Image (cartoon, rainbow, N blue to C red; front, side, top):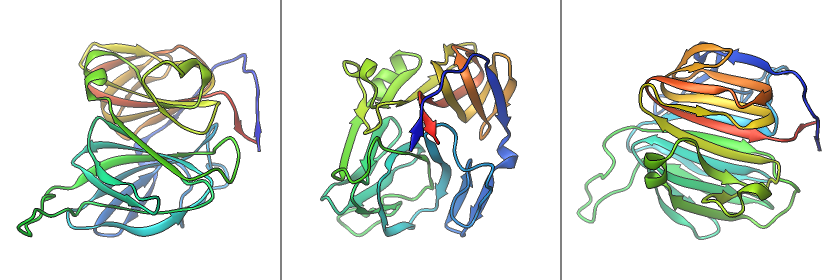
Length: 257
């Protein structure tokens, strides 16, 4: 269940990278911005509609074997390397930096994500780790049909500031965006050179994650890779890059009740 709420005061809540939960399985180095798996904190289960934001590094020749999901909108954003996706709806492919990908789990879906493709001669194609952020938001309603969508937006990232990557919001219907089944949420990304800036969306709940580099946050100071900021009542705060940076932003107009 979700509840809408209008906010009148901006609250800026900084979460340093060092505060994240960590999972190390040898082949996987994962940092969790929210409670995940065996890591549970009743005071850190979500923000707005965002339930999961995992920053994962997967070693070559390994990855997540086939596993199920249900009733979740899952967006995967690759930072470095490439990730092989396969699912029970028949979709398969390689996700790479600049390729937007969304999977709707709906009534149930099985999928795998690996860093392990091979050439026709049997040699491994993936010899470097893959670094990606996977994010989950609640859908508008349960039991929708499972689905998958991907689109290369690398050129848009190079040409513009904050690019809408995935959205279910009516205001983004005519923009380049992969659709998610959540009418109160949108995911944006930006790659910024030093001195360049973007303005955050105006929304009751905005989640900023610095995937790479270092930025100055209006009203929040300087933060670096792995840090995040949760804005309650965001009013278009400015984000300025102090080093080459990549920032991931969730704009949300409702929250988990």
